Each structure stands twice: as structure tokens, then as C-alpha cells.
Length: 365
Ligand code: G3I
Image (cartoon, rainbow, N blue to C red):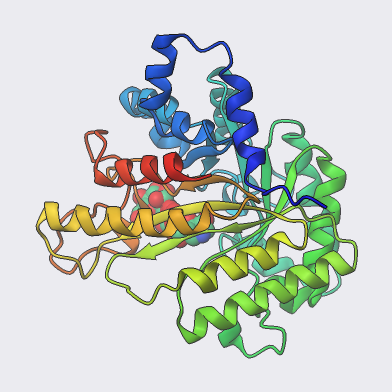
């Protein structure tokens, strides 16, 4: 039997779309102007997380977002504490604004997230117990995923359920959901999400899957085992989100190990998305040129590796511009200089990281 290389699938989409190309169009295709265009040439999606507060208050940012992105993840606006602030009270206002923004500008939208150990509202902490947690979880997922039914490309149904350092034999995080419901909460969440929105792709999403260090090697193994067991029990799961919060100074990157992990995930018939990529610059030189060069190098090295896997369908960064990034607050530099982890600078101009992401898309097969 002739073995057709898997990579031809993406190429076919591209070639199929360019049969009517004029000379001008050909020029544009060689040097597209946006990351979404570079990605689209290879049948991939590029996008970013963004907050309602930033997209709605800064028109220049919104304009650049639409230019660069084909897909949007609400950074915090769909999390439990924001969308379900009281037991019988849902607040869809910010999510609805983002869904409308996405629709108006022809962006796809991701859902983030239905089950997480963080962002648990105070009322839930105070009232949930092993007897009522399952019905609270089901009601939340039916209501939220049901509200956005048909509008979501992919949901991060369960986020960050693995923490090997918690000592559970399967590497499961001892999160509130685990304490209330045991390991079944994961399967339950996917089944209810599938019922609430049969059109959305349903993802498991996690971080620290990137480097060749003992904790991350163990975490990749635990995630793979979790995905295997979910598939074996018929859980409706369609993909793995690898967050890819990378570190500028970290050098323990092993492309072969990462590729093998992605191939193992793909062999379970799961799609893969890079869901939250950024490169933090604590520990890198202050000098912008040196710093940006290293950050760009990390983007390119990582994406060149990941994009070799044909089941990868898209890449999102966790923010588009250095002006708006969680890292300013959560991982500031020791010298207090503004952080530079994203493709655009604080004035929304492309940096070397932008070039690297574009190059990785351009050279992927
Ligand atoms: O909205 C309040 C604001 O009113 C207040 O003035 C300000 C004071 O510091 O805090 C603001 O809330 C913060 C919010 O981000 C918006 O900036 C919260 O304190 C802060 O905890 C929250 O952090 C978010 C974090 O998740 C926790 O939910 C980050 O923005 C968000 O980028 C981060 O995203 C996570 C993904 O969901 C999952 N993967 C990891 C990723 C990074 O941690």
C-alpha cells in the first residue's frame, strides 16, 4: 500500500484555495501581512486570548486583533467566578459581547474554561460537597455551554487536572472537584459539555508539557495516560490543548521527546492546539534587542517542532501585545522593566517574535 504522508492534508487546503491566484495575489501569498494569513496558508488557525475589558476599551487594539487573529479565547470572562458569580445568577454580558465581536469580525471563538481548580467562586467553595457537587457542575456546564451553543469552535472543558506533585497514583490534581467527586468529574464534564453543545470540539487543556525536565516528563506521561483512559471509556473528547507558557532562559528543550508525545496524543485520534503560548523574559537581559532575539528564537524552535505534527490545528498566544499580558503582574522581571513575551509590542507593532511565528507557519508542511 502506498503511504501518503499525513502532511499533504494541510497543503491540499492551501493549494485548493489558490487555483485562481492572480500575480498580485501570488505576491501577497508569498508575504502575507498577518499571522492569521500565514497560518491559513497551511490550513492552521492563529489567534490569541483577550479580555473583554481591553477589546472593548481600546479600538486600536481591537483593530490589530482583527487584523492578526482568526480565533479568540476570552482570557477570563467565561471563568466560573465571572460568569456564575452567585448560585442562581449567571452573568453572560462580557462573554456575549465577545461572542458578538467574534461573529461581527468573522473570528472563531474558544471557550475557556468549564472546570478548573482556580476561579472557583466563594459561594461554590462554601456550598459544594460530595453530595451536591455533581448536580452543580452539570447545571453550570449545561447553562454556560448551552448558552454559547453553536458559537464555540472548541471548549477547554477541563483545565489543568494533572499535578504529579500532588502524589495521586494517576497524577491527578487534588483540586476541589477531585475532592468532591473523585476522578469521575473529568468524564462527567465532557459528557455534559457534549450534550450542551454537540458542535464544539471538546478539549483537555494543560501546561508544563514542554521541557525535558523530570516534573514535565512525568506530567506528559500522566496527561497521556489520562487521555488514553478517557478514550477507552468512550468519553467524548476531541483534543488536547498544550498551553506552552515557555521560559526565555530555559534550555532543556528536547524536540524529539515533545514530538513523540504529540504523536502519541495524535494516535488516540485527538486534535492538538497550542492554546496559550507566550515566552516569559524574567532572567533574560534588559537589552531589548538581545531579549527579543532570544524570545523569538524560543517561539520558532517550539513551533517548528510542534507544527511537524499533522494533528495540530492551531496556535494561540496568551495575549497579542506586550501591553496586555498576565505576565506583567504574575511574572514580572526582577529589574521591573516591562515584559516582552508576545508577538506585538506595547504599541501593537510586530516584534521579532511575530517574524518567528510567521516563519514557523511558512516553513511548516
Ligand atoms: O479584574 C481585577 C481588577 O478589578 C483588579 O483591579 C486587579 C487587581 O490586581 O485584579 C483584576 O483581576 C485579575 C485578573 O487576572 C484580570 O487581570 C486577577 O486578580 C488575576 O488573578 C487574574 O489572573 C488571571 C489568571 O488566569 C487567573 O484567573 C490572568 O489574567 C489570566 O491570564 C490567567 O490565565 C491562565 C489560564 O486561564 C489558564 N492557564 C494559565 C493562564 C495563566 O495563568
